Length: 283
Image (tube, rainbow, N blue to C red; front, top):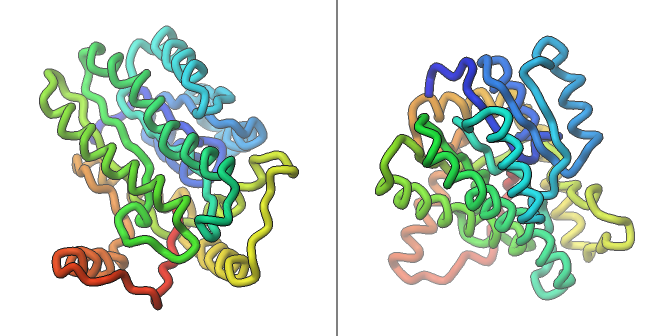
């Protein structure tokens, strides 16, 4: 997909962070972009950030946890454009803390956004993509945390991101058996300067949950490291380089590969998980 000019790109979670970076990169490549997000203010900021590309960009407020809303969104995109060449199921949030202390509503929220949001995108877009007669790619945003072993205080987030990785592997294999040129990639970011460590901003104040002292220290430390990471726009450039090359695994930051190799070796040797090392990463 190296020649993307005029192609149609759909991005969920486009109002901030990686989604906004992907949108701007797609616009610079001449694509028509449809950006969706539950955060209407974020979508307005996205529009304001690309004055020279506003004729290529449309936005829509969308809650990816609402299957019917995603279905209506997909129908609207196809009614207007007739095809989707690049779909980023990117919307995501972060919940951290001790797994037994997080309220069940927090678990449901992160699963509904991070996993069901991706599933809703696949369910409503992929059948249309298979029928459109044009090459297309589905890119599902996971995390480097979806590849590594469980991190301390990271169970809600990593649980969902592992699910996205496996889901996308299966999607890739299933699409390979279908006629046409529709395929899939999984995006596994590490530290990128996004606001995901402040996902509570998207929830009502009465649903915010305080963390214990150790968990809060961990949270603040990682959030600080993430803020110093590469910008979403720089990251998006690397992502599109991987898409140009037709890669399934989109892992721009390979610093974590030794840890992945160690985890694989631990599993093969049936060694217990390391309880000392803490892993800092972010979507």
